[in-house]
Image (cartoon, rainbow, N blue to C red; front, side, top):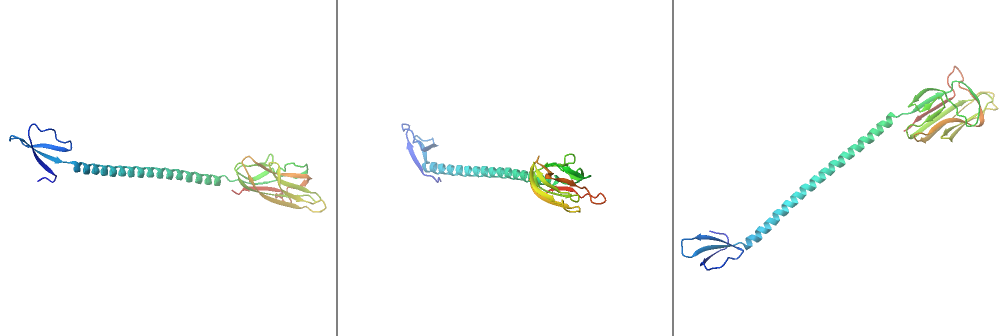
Amino acid sequence: MLFCKIRILMFSCMMGQLQSDMISMPLVDNIGATLKADLDVTKMNKYLHEYIQQEVSIGVLKAMGETVEKMVENKTHAVQTELEAKIAHQMNQFEKKDREMYALFAHLSSRKESLNDETVVIFDKAPLNVGGGYDTANGKFTCKDDGLYFFSWTTLSQPRKDFTSALFVNGDGIAENIVDNDETGDAMTGSNSAVVRLRKGDLAWIGVVGSEGNYIRYTWTNNIPASVFTGFKIY
C-alpha cells in the first residue's frame, strides 16, 4: 500500500513525456501496453524543501553558537591573561618600591664658622645612608626615586653667635631654622623639618641664609653629635 497519491495510467507507445513533477516507473512489462505509476511529489518537494531549510537553519545557528562561544571563551581568556599580567606588574612595582628605601642620618665632625650666604652646610659624617642618596663630600641628597620625603635638621650655635639655615630643594628655600643667639651667653639649638615631594634627580641640602652663618658647633659634650641632618622616604 502506498501512502502517497498514486495515479495508475495506461499509456500507448505514442504517449508524450510525463510532467516534470512526476516520477514514472514501470510496474509490469508483460502486457501489450505499458503500465506506469505516477507519484505526485509536489507536496513532498515542498515539505522536503522546508525540512532542508529547517535543518540548515539549525546547523547554522548551532555553528554560530559554537563560534560565538569560542570567541567569548578566547576573549575571556585574553582579558584574564592581560589582567593577571597587569596585577603581577603592579605587585612587582609595589615590591620594588618597598625595596627602594632611602634614609639618612648625617652630622658634623667639626665646628663651622663665618659661612657665607647660600653656603652648603656639609654634614660630613653619615653613619646611616640607606640607598646611598646622601653625599658626604658635597652635603647634598640626590633623589633616586620619585616620592614624598621627610627632612629634619638641628644646629647648635656658640654663645652670642647666630646661625640661620634652611632646607633647599633645587635652590628653592623650603623651611628655615633660626638660632638667634647674638645676645645670649649660652649655646642654643634650633630645629626644623619639612615634607617635600621629590622627583628623580632633585637635590636637597641645608644651606646658610643671609649673613647669619656665624658659628655652628658639632657637639656639646663627649663628642655626641648635636648638629645633625636626617631624612627618609615616606613612600
